[in-house]
Length: 432
Image (cartoon, rainbow, N blue to C red):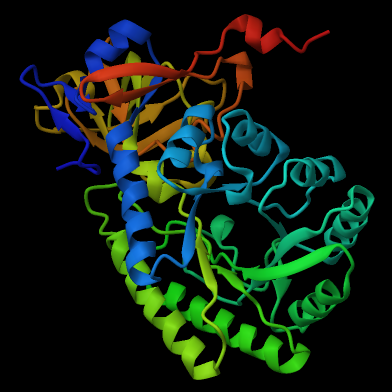
């Protein structure tokens, strides 16, 4: 019935998350709020770590892609679950360091890292810096030389694979702002430069073909292409690549009709390709890294709003307005992302209506979902949007000077605040 095993309906007919009644949470914390199921997040982490142990004999590291949802508590959970961390900014590095996350398990990404961010990574002994372009490689070498350090890097490679996802989140094809292209010879030139550059240790290669991908075949193809390139580097440059980061992008369940493959199946099938190709090409099996983000937290978060008004436009549509919107969930306006919505206080009732869920921003396009099946909904009801755990709070804004929502973590029927609700004072804090 639900997109996550952590969701349920209690005897009062209310939606529950991690054993917590969403109606009771609304009374305790107000709305809108985002609630995460801690047990399910940890379960997902453990499944990935277990797959790495079983399919690669422990010769690898699972790095949580913190851009999906970054906060101190998520960093602490990942640390406890023996995960690595994928960061893409100085802010995400700062958060990880403040949470006491082991810096050697951090991978630093980004297509336009600043000198300050690169210096922060070096100062904090970040384990791997994923270099995106030649200019960055040269700047990093200079910065590392000044500090007397050797920067351990991976080169981000575009394997030329179209993963058939939304055009905004396809990143593996040649027309992408990320990385070095294979087809043009750019990638091999970058390898040669990195090997020859002082203060640089080229430990590995990285690729990422896109996000929210249900088909395993593109991941298998990417693994083959990357092992082939590692073999070509060995033959051409005489250099042995020690590590291979295959990125993330595993699809999750947003709607009941979605049918993503189990994460363990992704891992197993790709591992077979990696091992077979490495043996065939006579290269040493590299240390493997992967970067799941959405698949760790996406389905485990629920956003709950209060319905302010229901507006029926005969023969056209019904608008249900809530006390949030594109400020806490911009994914519909960006990607036309699908979501399952429900009346949290009537979760045991059948969905008999179709509505357009509208946010409170002064924008006609501020919608969360259109033509969405839902129970009969009235002003004052609680509306829940499922699978809002990834790229919702992370992409939230203060448009119209609306405060970001409170975020709570649920576990075994208890809840705790992990991010406080913003206040108007918070919004004006940097004004002068």
